[in-house]
Length: 156
Image (cartoon, rainbow, N blue to C red; front, side, top):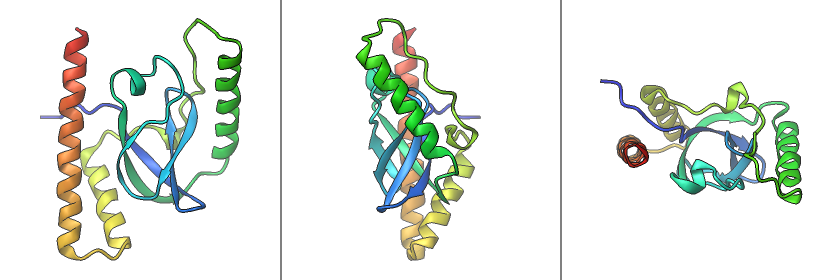
């Protein structure tokens, strides 16, 4: 059975200053967090964003890669668009920049688990700690999926 997961498993890219960056599909900007995988409160700045309204958290899945070329340029364009939206006090819905290929949410549980295990090995974790990382990831995936299902049912 394929388990449905919300768009909250986000590929995290390495940026300077020991941080991760993820692309937010709702505001069309990067969000920056500490460089550890796991759940984070969304920094989404758009009123009406599902991250503010229904699902305030997402999960950082480390890719082990630096932020792709051109990502900061897209981020600056997105922030300019967000600021313009705020200043003009638009009452119509905000339309973010398109999600770049590298910023799309991750939906394959096995792929995400593989990234987590790779991250754990790169950190020099013991086999027991790698297993703990996998268990934590599985528990998080299941919790996110259950919360997403509850949110969807509440809206119908």
